[in-house]
Image (cartoon, rainbow, N blue to C red):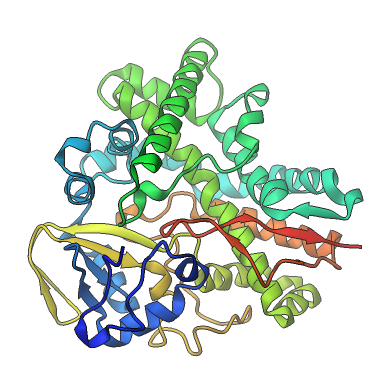
Length: 411
């Protein structure tokens, strides 16, 4: 499946399968080679790849790029797949729509993620971090992903959405987000079937949650969204369900991967872990560097709504464009020695949360959760080691980069 194979001049070592385990283990050498040989490249499948920081920043902010989700799906799956449950559900979310629908949907939830609201959550999140670590402290071992990186943000987003504690057990068991539907490489029939089953199960639960909050309103996001739906002009029932599901998934997935990818990177460059332990005041800056170094989100997609020139190449209207955020974060034109992890690096502006009107709503929340987890690990488990750091178990996913598990031990 070398549907992203670069042009003839870059054949050989650049031919790749974006779901190949070797590529998923380390995509960055490919990004560098593509940036050097074909920074604005049209793949045989018909979509474009951007790898330069400057081009990606421009494209995410320019109004000639939109979110033509239907065209992207038709290109990957055919016109008859838009009614597949997973695809139809995603099509109703703020993630893949343009204004005015994007503006309407996003405005309904923005106030829950303001800087002040997030800052007010700090004490609660700090307590939650310690509660999760209390569960494993005496064992001397844990799976970082399952025991803290996944559990913590799931509890936080459950709190925000008003999901009752007695309903949360199933959400704690592992990732509830497939993510493969976002990849530019189509899912297999089996993967699509699994995504549909997961979507239908999630929809059934979120319908129940909405019914509960109609009967028993609370100070939470679901109650706010239910009120908007009942007003009749701001949110349809299908949009309500789909966007609660999106908030749940997006609300934990990127944070889980920030913590897992970040801790792994710190232990693979052990001097940086020791530096962070010696000076915890570096943690906020380290979060920015970890986001840059191994981004939880590796790409985002757009479509040209008018002819536009990018990096000296003219893209016609109606073209699908994939911005490789992970490549932008390692662009040597933007960062000196970009493949080196440096938690003291200055002027870091990672592209990991996207940009423009679709910039991640929960970016500050993810940063806060990451900061509090790393601070607690340093304080409570200073002898922490990752015995499998040299053979990490990466999830088979291109867009959402993360680990299946990350064993840790301490004494």
